[in-house]
Structure formats: structure tokens, C-alpha cells
Length: 600
Image (cartoon, rainbow, N blue to C red; front, side, top):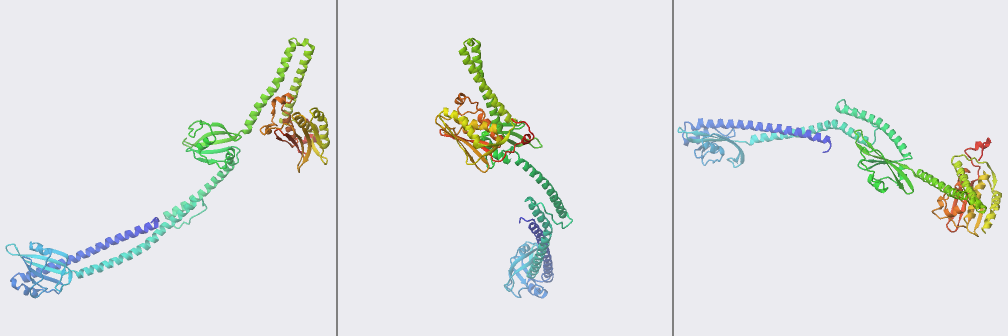
């Protein structure tokens, strides 16, 4: 019964049924009343006739004879005369006594002097058949005013009841036919009304499912037709608007998911609304499914950040995620009524920035420290000389020698810093030539062999089985090779073995320097190319190192489009490898060399 069509049909049938029942009942009651009134008049006339023709002017012993002579029951009416006690003394139903005795409410009323009519009384007739009767009792008064006789007439109501039953049957059939016709007409009417409504409902469901490309057929010009036309217009406008919204949404999604910054949006109840790919990558999660409180707890963000920020301006917080540092800016957003609807969190990966800041701070601190030590030494020895030590030539020469050594140390430091500064500012220009590395490395090993033999170390080079030609700046390449070989000699113990050899793959020639020295710990290995980083600071300073050699070597290799790598096992030795591309490197400033530009 959920369909409006069946509701309409049911209501229509109910209305017709009620109308038919009411009208049929009214007709039946009217007919019954008419028949009852007609029978009453007939019984009253019959009773008056008995009084006039039988009782008046006749003695009681002659009542039966005169009753039989005067009236008969051929018209279906029975006539009886009762005495004041209600006993039958004359009757048209029998010729001789005993007569039939009656018990009827009408007789009791007649005994009390009141004429009375009753209907629906069932009793047997003279043949012993049970029938329904309509009866009338009329008292006959004596001169004293007391009831002397009672004229009791009754009429068989079977014919009337049969007539009423036939009428009822006819009305029932009419009602059934009317209901059938009403059902048919109601169905047609309901279908006419609900058909377009069902079509509109289906269209609305399709529209809710995203099927906007639809148009319903307008079947009439009435209100339903106007509603269908309005629906079609609405669908067309909705298609147009949704197309625009979809385009705008796609543009925003493309922008959002291709942003380098992470974006997360939370509703005012803390529920996650959206998170782009960058946010998930920064937070190291496969899928962002945290609410606001879970997000705050998981990343241990300051408790000063809360969801209901009200009119508070944006708040910025920095927190670590693994080895990265993320800067999160929390900004509330509002609806047109200036009611807060949620918080947008913008994430930025500031790891590199923080590293640069830390490196800058460390660089400044290291430079200050490296310069302060020799400056302090120079100043203290100079003050000593000025205070009188200059007169002692032997002491003065010793002090001056120390001052000269410290000055050289500062000069080396400044030179290395200037080199790094030129690399940072892209001011270094390479003089690219062909270098045959077998000969080049053999020369370099011979030059450094004396230093290795001084520490009773074995320094050797094994030439490659065919000529190895690289493209590079001979001076810069020699600086890198010398730095690595001297480091191997410097940081290896006596009787260590240092081997220089060449390998290759499809793209690179690889020149390796392998020693059996002290090695580098796993924690220190990733940082050895950082500026001023020393594995053993005290020993490095004692050996005269500035902590910039490997940083410069790395810059030189990268400027040649190669790279410098290190492999080491603490206590067993280190292997440093220089990777030179086999093809001539394409430098950004190659045109300078072709036009005879400056080199550095």
C-alpha cells in the first residue's frame, strides 16, 4: 500500500462503496418503511371494518358467524376478536373453537386501552408454519370507558420480506458492478496521475545516481505536465551546473594533488575531509584516515593547537616525521555567517631548509673555530716576541716558525673556502681535455710513494688492460686523486696496503683507492663529504687537515658529471671510488671553451 496509485484506487473504491452502501441502505429502509406503513394502514382499515360490521350491533355469540360472513382472509390478513382478558373469542383462521391464542406486545397495549402496531413478530400460522407477522391491536371500549373487546389483526410479512430481499440482492449486484467500474475507472485515473509521478520519481533517482543526461516525455498540459517540463528544465540546468562544477573540481583536484605542499582539511567535529598525495607522502602513511585528535596525538604536535580556534589567526608548528622535518600551518575557515567550519592544515617539508640552516650554523662555527685556533696561536707568540723573546734569536726563530706554520694553515683554509665558494656560485670553469688514466695514475702514485714508504706502507697501482681515456680538467682531476691517495696514506697505520686500480661498466670508468687502514664507522660514513666533518677531529687537526678536502673533491667530481663514493668497514679499511663518465660531459658553460672564455 506504499504506492500512491493503490492508495488512490483504494480511496476511490472506498468512497464508491460507502456511497452505495449508504444509498442502498437508505433505499431498503425507505422501501421497508413504505411497506410497513402500507401494511399498517391495511391492518387498521381491516380492524375498523371488523368493529363496524361485526362487533357493533351484534352479540358476542354471533361474532364468529358474522366475522366469517363479513370478512375473509383471502387478502392475506387474519382477523381476530379477543375479550378484555386477551382470549380469542372469534377468528378468521378457524370455523369453530378452540381458537388460536396469541401473545403479542400489541395485544397487551390493546388491553390497556392503547391501539398498537408491531412488526417482526414470529409465530406459527394455522398450519403450524413459522412465519413473520405484522400485527395491529385496536381496543373496543364500552360505554363505561373500559376495554370490552380487542380487535387483533395480523398480516403475513413473508411477501414483503421476499420483496425486500430481492431489492437487497439487486442493490448488492449494483454495488458490485459499481465497484468493478469504479476500480477500472480508479485504476485508469490513478495511472494517469501516478504514471508521470513514477516517471518523475525514477528520473529523480537516476539523477541522484548521477545520470543527469535524461529528459522525460511531457504527456499533458495540466499541472503534472508542467511539473514534468519543470523537471526537464531543472535536469538541463543541473547538467550544465554539474559540468561546470566537475570541471572546476577536476582543476582543483589536479592542483591539489600536484602541489608540493601537503594539504589536509578537517571538519569542525574533527572528521577528516580531504588529504592530498603530498600530505600522505610527507606523513609516511599509505592512506590518510585520521581524525584531528588522532593526527595531533600521532605526530606529537603541541597541545597549543586545537580544533576550535575561533577567531585566532593561523598557527605554525614544526614536528619530525622519521628523519624529515615538517612545518604545519593550522588555519581555520568560516562559512558566510562567520561560523567556523573546520581547519585546513598546510604541510611543508623543511628538511632541506633545516639541514641548510644547521649546516650554515655548523659551517660558521667551524670556520670560526678553525680560524680562532691559529689566530690565537699567532697572537700569543707575537705578544711573547713583543714582550722580549725577540732578543733570544733561537726562541724567536722557533716562534716565528710556528707563526709561519699557522699562517700557512690559515692560508690553506682560506684557499679551500674560496674554492668551495666558487663551486657554490658556479664560477669554476673546467679546461676539459683527454686524460689517459693509466699514465696519469702511475705518475700520481710515484709522486706519493715517498710519503707511503716513510710510514712503511705499500702503495701500488695496477694498470688497466687497455688504455683508459677520460674527459676532464687535468689539474682538478689530479687534485681529487692526490687528495684521496694522501688521505689513504695519512689515515692508514704503518705497513698498511694501499692499492689504486681501474674498473668499468657500460657508462663509467671507476678509479678506486683501497686501503687497509682504520676504516670509517657506519654512522660517520654518510657524512664524510660534509664540509668540516672529521671522523677523528683531534687527529685530523694534528695532521693538518682542514676538513674540506673531500667536500672539494666531491664538488669537482660532480662538476665533471661524475660522482665520488665511499665504502668502508670499521677496522678493516676504506675504498674510495671516482666515477668518470665515458662520454664527454655536456657542461652548461661549454660555449665558453669554444669561444676561448675564461677557465678556473
